[in-house]
Amino acid sequence: MSGFTETIRKTLAGSLRALRDYPAAILSAALFLLVTLVRIQIDFPQQGSFAFLFSCLSWSLALGTIFSLMAITFFHSRFNTKKSFLLANILSLSAVIFSFLMLFLFSEAETALPEYSYQGYDLLSPLAVGRISVVMLVSYLLFIVFSGQPAKAELSAYQPEDASNVTSAKPVKIIAGEGESAQADAISAEPEEAVGRKLPQPDGVDAAKSARPDESAEIKSKSAAAKKDSGIFGIDFAGALFMHIKAFSVAFIYGMVMLIGASGVAGAIQALLYQDMSFKVYQYISTITGFIAFTIFVGYFPDFR
Image (tube, rainbow, N blue to C red; front, side, top):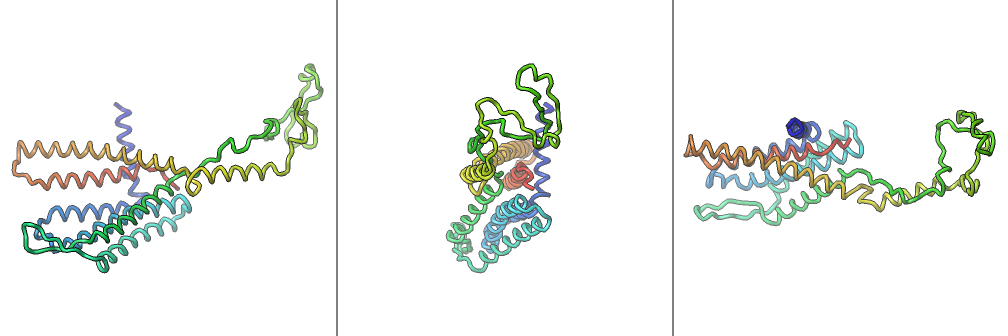
């Protein structure tokens, strides 16, 4: 039971850590939450006159949330300075403002006419929604790429012919004789003392093979080629994608547990105490639970600095 409690504590601590590591993303998500709660509270047809404004705000904040995850991860993993972190947050907030202005001022609007009202209201056109959706998709793919760790070079890219060619900084033994009886006369010497002395080579190994001038360059070239072929931009893309799927799964499970539990409590209150409770209560619960699940999702990622 203590292990289960510790897991929950670490998960919630990670969601709180997301406030420190991704402030622009959490701020955009919180504003998105606020806009959604306002839209739930205002009924139609009163909301009709603000529908276009709310749509522009929601889409721009959603784009800013994903863009900020990508930007902060990029600057964390590649630069890791306070100035770069500040620049990433400024760019993220600028992306929210820029996308909102582009949607509100220049995007085409379609007039929707509900069945219960003769007064239509404007909404974003499918073309504008499709464009901003593509930008969000590209931003998230870059977020996956930038969150990947550098790919490790394959060990099989180059294998030395003999393990005795590898030198180390440990004290070496100077063999006084060649027979088995001479092993007892071995003395230990520091590497500085052993410089210039000839060490015995194992039987069947040519001493000329142990010192090749281009060996280091060959190892580096083959290791770089193996690293280049192992992932996108030199990163382990498969590992990064698995990390994102795992983070989504964990956040989804916690979110569903919180949603079912809170909805069950609200349902019990409605059935036993207050039968006229509005259905908006369940919408509030779903929205707030989604925000908490998002913070758990973001907090699951490691520190990329």
